[in-house]
Amino acid sequence: MLLDVGTLPAFVLASAVVILTPGVDTFLLLRTSVRFGPRPGVHALAGIHTASLIQVSVVISGLGALITSRPEVLSVMKWVGAAYLVYLAISILRGLWLTRKEVTGSSTPEENVRPEANPYLRGLLSNITNPKMLLFSLAFLPQFVGSASNPAIQLAALGAVFLLLAAVWEFAIVFTASRIADRLRRPGFRNSLDLVSAIAFLGISVGLVAG
Image (cartoon, rainbow, N blue to C red):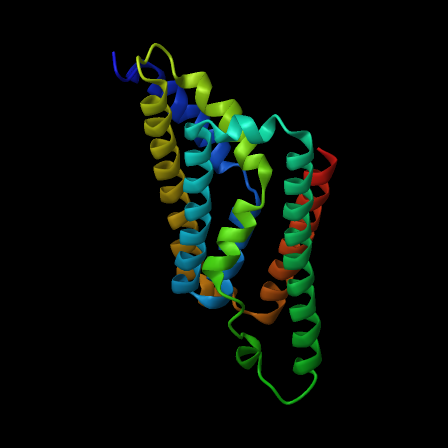
């Protein structure tokens, strides 16, 4: 048979566990949506899924296996990904420091909420520079090929299902965070969210190069 749909229930369940586990994407979307609203949140989401689509395509094409067979390439990817996460963390901490400095002046809390760099680009880079997504796709998707007569089509279908499930969950994060953002935009909460996000990015960057 062209596709083996018998593996789909187990794949959906396993995918749900992976998608619901908080990571870089979760913190980036939550912070962007709470601080800047749904439009930047959706832009960041689009960037994340552009990167995910590229990575899944790389796995299906067979290029992913070639990349992961070269330890030096993986090492470079890990360090680049870690460096970008550190950059995001430093940018957030710098923004926190500037906000605290301005709050002591004449500016109001709402004036301190300024748009950051292109959220689409942030979402794209935070995901595309993370080799763990590529390694995960290589290890995860092939387990559910089953008896499909065309593994490439099965992998493409599984990748599409995974991205759809992830998009539904991440849209929920964006719009839920945006809807309750007015209640959460108190300076204390915003600053705490920024600090937690920065610490998470730094922690994930360490895990990236140590793993």
